[in-house]
Length: 395
Image (cartoon, rainbow, N blue to C red; front, side, top):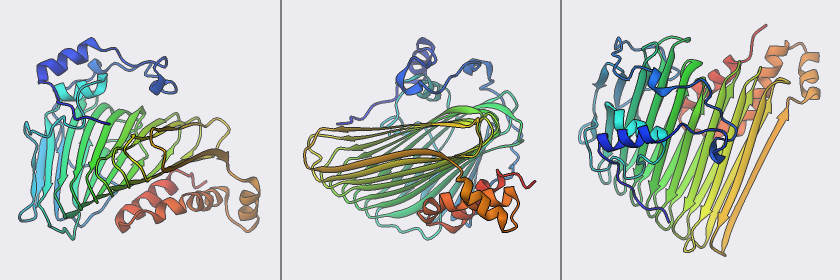
């Protein structure tokens, strides 16, 4: 069963970071993701950005918004009674994500900007809360930390978007998110990454879901050069449920890596992870998923799937599903596929007057439709559709 961890002091975290080597392809979780050519210390962690607000994918009517860059954090609007403020040395920091690997140790040692969100007991927010994290310094490093607490019986939506000030910005971003969904609360969490294709991005997102609570998570990956995103859920109370929906699209020589973990630590819990990706040109993607059921987590119902649509002969995807079941009264299933565009479908569309690009866009839309149907927020769904279709050339 997962135990809480305590993030060390900044000095201890820095020492830990200095002691650890960068992971290599000899490490199991990095077997398909090489960090050759990456030196985190080559990026300037003290850089100060312009504070400008670059364009983003999402247009959200938010109850409160925060805009983050290397220069600081600006908060615009705040619902009455809600904590929505810069993160200090809060007691919850590190309870879910400590400093046990090179990247989380780097974040624990170096983060300067963060946000604390707390939705009080029983409060139901009608509009989402939103934060835009913008990388704006060429050669800079941006460390970001987020803590969200949905107290007992509350309901809220939180949207987080990562963007770059320019499409060719060379940078390093490192993010840590800790989500606490308390008893009978409901949290909808959206994290969209659309950084420049010259940015190395590493993120560790972890959630703990209490008794009869519900977490609905949407993850979108469209930018960055290379890196890794960890998504880990702990279903800690009986009746807890989580649903994670992932959509990604890579082209050029992009490499996206998602490592997901569903831990069932209590009985009568349910999790549903569905990730789909499309790959063009010489891009690559990795998805590794693990369902772990603890001995006392009887009546677990868990599912995970990863489907990839390959749009060129050079693109490649690796899917590694896994099960670790220590209880005997459970239902756990998984599936993974990678397949090229169906030539008959492509021919059918083009024979009816569509260009190849329009035909591919139609096929991609159909491939992702069941994922899109899982996204409840219209602005998020529309932005994901536009991001997917924009990656297909018009010519």
